[in-house]
Image 1: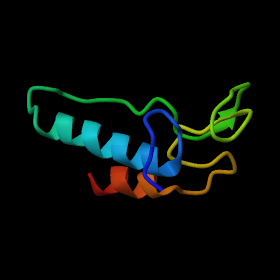
Image 2: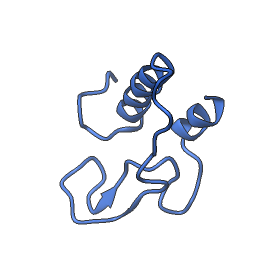
Image 3: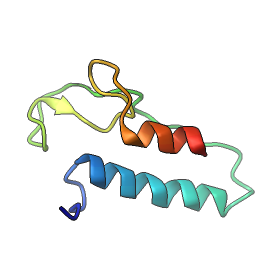
Length: 74
């Protein structure tokens, strides 16, 4: 399925991350950046997975997501 903006699916996260990592790579004057959520955590939401903030690079039980490997490659 094609990701929909802000659906917080793994596909959306991968597409979004590819865009902003490229943006940083294209701007050598940017000294650094920070990925705020290292891992998913419990939170009251209406997102793809109820009660889970799923924007981390690791799942709530610390399993590596595809996006983890994207960060590792950069």
